[in-house]
Image (cartoon, rainbow, N blue to C red):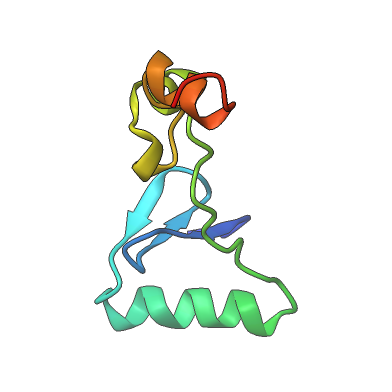
Length: 81
């Protein structure tokens, strides 16, 4: 297995080369290969939470970080109280 890239996933597992997902409780041979790759000066890509889409924000309530209903938006802008 030739390792070109390693991404850390949300659950702690590793995604190797963008396709092969290796769980956190991976076999020792995989762990040694990834460790050798890191020891060679490479750095795994850290996990970054994906940005919510406009639709997700639009349908979420304001308490959950969304835009809320139109009446909530008017209230936030001071038009409606």
